[in-house]
Length: 196
Image (tube, rainbow, N blue to C red):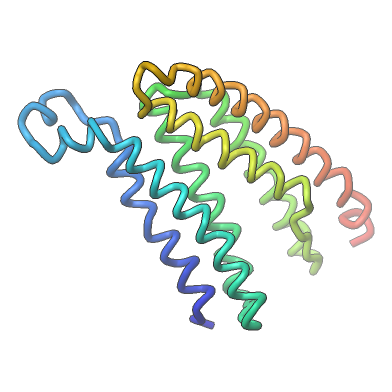
């Protein structure tokens, strides 16, 4: 079960603590007292963006490796979507904590994941496996793009003010896609759940 594809997924999850360290807002006295904290305050967001993009790339890589080398396992099926959700929700929460996003966005995105996870657990209890659909995949792509642009907007110089506005629009599209994909997922699986 611990094949190359699963190791890539676990490596992606292992990057989460680094993201927290890089994006965590630190008190001013720590920046004044410790050079490392000052550097994190100054370059943490852009470094976190690079880590986030590397993690997004490994998401595609582990899927490719699993299919190409016939390494699809139940562990991989569990870990891969878990890693995706952990990364998106961690970055989302840290951006809210840093004052870069309004809290209701996090509530909507986290709420959707909680509802869909509950539906999947209900289906699993009935012996039904509900796969992710293409709308869910597009939702994830939009969320990753929106979060990346918001992070870039927070680390970009004043000359790139337009990046912050683009991040706002992308985030609005991601929120809309999150809600719509959630409704679509429940509606398309409703008959299956009732029959089960």
